[in-house]
Length: 89
Image: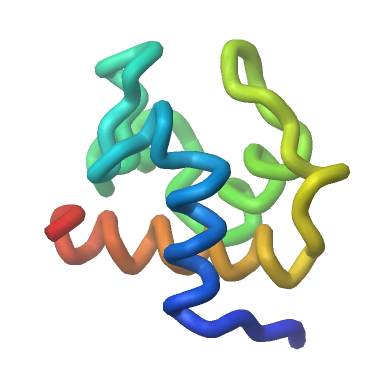
């Protein structure tokens, strides 16, 4: 399995995701934050579903599958899950 460091995943998240998802929020839709509760409510509460969403996007979120490697996507998915579990602190 591919692996990316936590620091690198944080850097990728900061570069590609934080403009809309700063601190686990959602600038475009406050009901679709990256909190555990909202991830579960929206059916993206595991690494596979988060990776698919990052890869393919879902309007208004763009797809990042052409911009990020599989390793980066998997790392960001794990980062999101870890941060959600910690309450984005």
